Amino acid sequence: MRRRQVWSYLRGRFSVALLFIGAGGLPLAARGQPAALPTSPVPALDNPQPTVQPPVEDSPLLAPGPNAVPPPAPAADAVADSPAPSRFSLAATLAVSYQSETNSYLMVGTPVLRGLFAITSHFLIEGDWGFAVMRDSESSTTARSGNPWLKGWYRGERGRLTWQAGVGVTAPLASVSVEPDGRIQRALYNQSAAAWGLWDYWRWTSGRMAVPIPAAISYALSYSLTVTAEAALAPVVGVRSGESGTDLLAQLALGARLLLAYDLWLCPRLQGVLLPSASVDRLQTAAGLRVEWVPRFGRFFLGALVNLDEPLGVFGRGSQNWSIHLGKELDL
Image 1: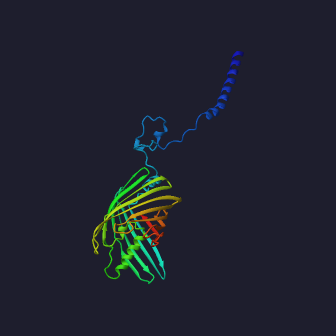
Image 2: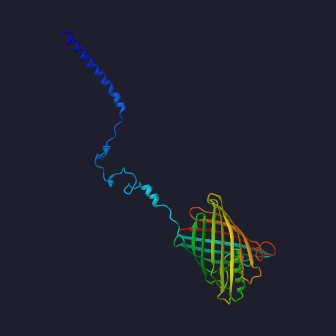
Image 3: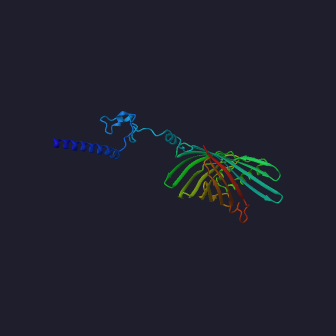
């Protein structure tokens, strides 16, 4: 009897101890287990290894692939709104020269308008038209049209090298009268050509049309420095105002573009023009320096061009011709 009571007493004590240990161990077990994941709105995703996979097109949790969820609206808009290359370009340039002598002066302005259309990234069509305006000390003004010039370009690029070549034709709208005013008109065309250092001389040849074949190449030495070269050949034919015969014009220019500061470039240039065989001085050279500002909405530039040798140069017995150039270019 006494043994049974002792056994009952020990069993009761042992049960209480087990209950105490079990109650104390529950918090420890809870600390060792990870927190339960919140319930998914899609019941099938609650099971970490579902027996039936959800359809590909209905799952927003799949890795990117053919059926991936499209990007958020802002990202899609950024891709859709990426800037496209400009297909149209308009430009206007004004060259102004001033000559002063005893009790007289002569100021000449030559605005040139230009338009460019890109058919593709490689083929372009360009047209420009120059005008000549002269005012003298007697307050008389003379204005004439230059020869419009239409040309087509092919442009290529390979690494840091960019090149383009083309062919064009001018319309012989420049003309001089046989009246006494003809002498003034011819002087106006000569002064207009001098304001550009005789570059693109066929733009100001009266009674003649030309077929210029221009080419240009540039190489980027670095982000901030690019060297360039331009050249052109042009047969010139007399077609009106008593002009006759065929001659050949040639020109070559070397230049560079140097980044001075953000959007601000410095562009030096040295050019030479081989004049028609009838000219006394066959080669005319000139030097230019231009500052360009290239913001997002176009290109502004201001520069000066100085003729170096006879008959127009500022040295020796030249006629001291130099000019100021300013202009604006806009891409559409």
